[in-house]
Image 1 (cartoon, rainbow, N blue to C red):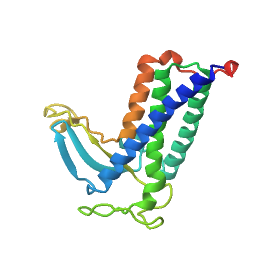
Image 2: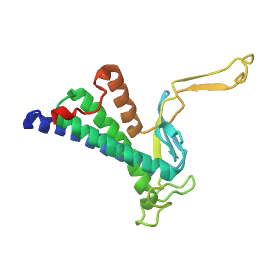
Image 3: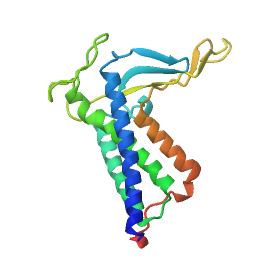
Image 4: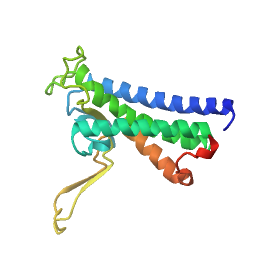
Length: 211
């Protein structure tokens, strides 16, 4: 077991990362949802837009099974990630950078859970060009665990037309990068990338011997 002071420092690091990601993610989502109508697009730079969409799916709008299954899967995953994070903090087997990356992944997953659990109960969901507003609990557009995830970050870096002679896609437009995502998705992606690139040798279950 590592020293108590080290556990405290590592715990604060993880807690600050989690709070920062969740607060920033929710602040941006609520700001966009209450100021943009669904589908509205604001060009910040030619390669960066705020584009308000909602989805039932996982990161970057992907879909997997029913809405209730997705929400339950997220809750289980966050619980598992939180348990792993706490075990790693206690046993001292992982460097601070690994812990921060895992905390970012945990926070990102939790950020999207908040949308799924609460947004259907506390927001209206009007047709464009009307804008969503807060409402009393139980008077929103959906039920508990049935809320839609808010996405808004879009980076259309470049696009081109496929040559007409290309099979299947000839004449169609290819755009990179098309998925619209949110800060929670970005935290998950960055956290996973950091662990794979810099801490892959630390990917292992907590050691029981160090408890």
